[in-house]
Amino acid sequence: MTGYSSKTDVATANGKQNGSGNQTGENGTKPTEFTPQGNHASENNIQCSLTSDEFRAVNLMRQDMYPYEVIQEIADFIVKGSGIRPKIGIICGSGLGSLADIIQNPKVFDYEKIPNFPVSTVEGHAGRLVVGTLEGANVMAMQGRFHFYEGYPLAKCSMPVRVMKLCGVEYLFATNAAGGINPKYAVGDIMLMHDHVNMLGFAGNSPLQGPNDPRFGPRFPALVNSYNKDLINKAIEISKTMGIESSVHVGVYSCLGGPTYETIAELKALRMMGVDAVGMSTVHEVITARHCDMKVFAFSLITNKCATEYSDKKDDEASHDEVMAVAKNRQKTCCELVSRLVAEIQKTA
Ligand SMILES: O=P(O)(O)O[C@H]1O[C@H](CO)[C@@H](O)[C@H]1O
Image (tube, rainbow, N blue to C red; front, side):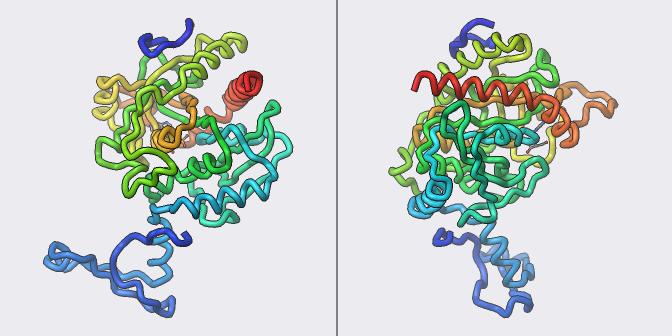
């Protein structure tokens, strides 16, 4: 593979509480009657009963406003607790948690113990933040990311990227497991992301929705050149020295909301749009990282081939077990790619 250029195709605590309805303090067991506001609701007499504890839990999950100060508090907690100011932030994809296991002198924070942090709910996402060193560089890794389908708003899913920024992170490495739509991709291949199609954005959903805080970035950030070309080229060179260049591609990722895997018609449509691999993550993290001017490197591990023609083959059905198994098989290669790229960054620092 030759060098990459975009012309070639080689390759709260005090946050706003959402939701409407009766939130007055109940005794925790008595159901609180919740009536959605508005004519439509009352016309149709829609009602649902939640205990006040359930209501609080749902509200906390739906919280999507994290004021700068709250994010700063979380960042301070991590920097003080670890004694490290990380330069590189890594997000481990499904089954790729071992990317955090190679960090030396790790200081581990369970998400539950970090103030105002969401918790991981998906198998293959341990729910820990690991801070330490890798190839001499200070790094922090999320062993477990947050997905839209877990019930979290996108701003909450990518809030940890802002935490990384305020910890001092300059480079985001986002990894994911994805289905290969490009017929040339095989299971176990790696696709270096050079662009994305934001399907959730097409539907009017963005992690940057709501008031913009200019301390993070501009109201209308540009997303061309989101994926750092130098880092893509370095990764291609590294793949050659690792002897895996024939299974490394450069391509376009698309994020859908999940948790369902795609229909054949959807996969056909994505392919027509120029998408090479599909998943349910990463794009909101990249948007948040670019908004606050971080350099982004991202790759997909192709864990399954997506069928784009109708057939009765059971093999065509994606499954999370398959995703996890392939990720486990390829974790060593992914770890080596990441460590070597970190070493490159560290060399030129
Ligand atoms: O994108 P990551 O977190 O790697 O996980 C991918 O794997 C899961 C589906 O198997 C989905 O969450 C999809 O997004």
